[in-house]
Amino acid sequence: MAQQSDFRDVLLVDGYNMIGAWSNLKQLADQDLEEARNRLLDMLDDYQAYSGRRVITVFDAYRVPGLGASYKQGDVNITFTKEKETADECIERLVAELKHRRRAIYVATSDMTEQNVAFAQGALRISARELQLIIQQARQEVQIRIRDQALYPVKRNPLEEKLSLDVLLKLEQLRRGKTK
Image (cartoon, rainbow, N blue to C red):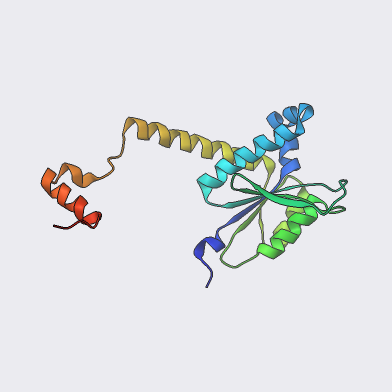
């Protein structure tokens, strides 16, 4: 039987489409494409940790000879397409492979044709601008949670305030398997 985490939602990202659409990454890519990719992947890694969705980023290696490559950076799965395969084709293949009735698949691209093809296969579409806004909102929510935890720290064990010290010590001994 498959574990529930096997059915978590998936976000498929057309990496170069995001880099070309997000002005900060586009400017960076003009000087250092690898750094722009790394920044995108860092943002997607943070978003994956926040959202719980599995993130797969596809980079087009259409004109690069070879078999393609897949690896992880942080927790984000990265795929460079095979020779003569576009990122769009790879994303379409992944949508078909990952399709499951208990899993939502989101495709992030601003390529309208790709959005329509992914939608026809049952995936939900997200434009580059929408994904940028979603990631910014997630970042703001994390910052708010961090600030709130600093201002209002959560006590590790709320029973500590209500029980006497020797009861707490006895409970700790029980927890550790040390009974007298």
